[in-house]
Length: 312
Image 1 (cartoon, rainbow, N blue to C red):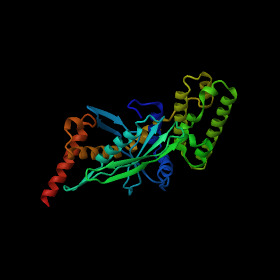
Image 2: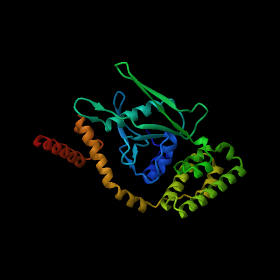
Image 3: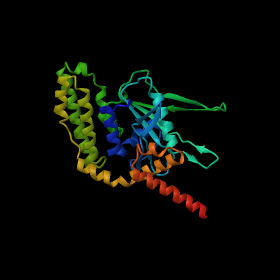
Image 4: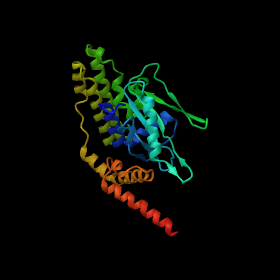
């Protein structure tokens, strides 16, 4: 993605933040993993400084871990279309995540690259997985594949049946809006399809597959994406308003959720700052991202750990 946020980036990040467990089936499909929805999804810092002749802060779409025992971080980018630079950005973000989690024993330092993948909202026959090859100065090399998921490969029914509910808001990318704008039949078919979708999500809530909050979040992000895509298609937008109706998330519930995870976020910030201090990042640069209180607490933790080692 570019440095400027799009409604689609916002929808992706909002859903990941508010309904983190819904990303698990996406990870299972994309990387061939086998996590259950009961696993804990831990979200980490997704803002990094990239140097290209000057410092530039970029925001990844995701940086997370599933479960407490997994050694892997995951990094998925939401891409509206292939622009030729996405793989370079994928590797930039991956190396920054590896730096933030690096482990050093004084003699060697280990960098763990995350499992990276791309969610393509628009695609064609040439939109495929990509192999990254890294050559080391000793002549050795490593390679790994960046898998992709293409929205165009799924029907709305498949997303529902296969538990890929996280992708539902982006299904609207599959419509030919120019054609639909001139066809009442296509608009009515779209309205009927989404009406059926809402009923199905209600059924999922009743049987405990998803929560009422998750259903509301999915509907709100569907509204956000559909409204953004249909801005230049007046007739389609009227149909969108008929079926979407401007769903609004319960922000009181979001506030409670944020308060419940506040401690985890603080711990993540402290860990990140400790790593930055250990790698010699200047205080001035650290304070452009983190508060003075977080910096001082991280410094106290490092100093305390150092004193304990000296006393042993």
